[in-house]
Length: 111
Image (cartoon, rainbow, N blue to C red):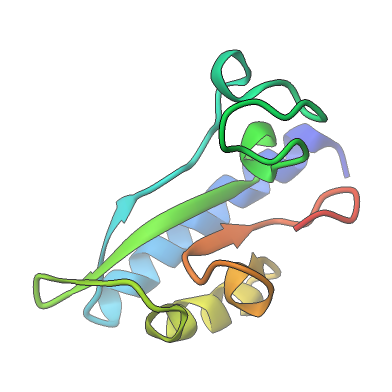
């Protein structure tokens, strides 16, 4: 699968995740989505806080801020229902390895 086809698949999956979140009574705002290489470095280059191989740089990862009843939810456990749904779509959920608010699509062994 090409990078471009993965990016298009990822975008559609994000739409499904957002819809699911709202159906479950959550609200979302975007955290980090695309990380511009002029600020964060090219893929393989460490610049700013971004990891050198971050999937955000390839438009295959997004971090969401999660809310319920107007309250900002920050724990990985708060994200679990969305993370498990994301995994059911074929994505990788950061709650399994680092940050609960991270949702990505694996590429070249990175998630």
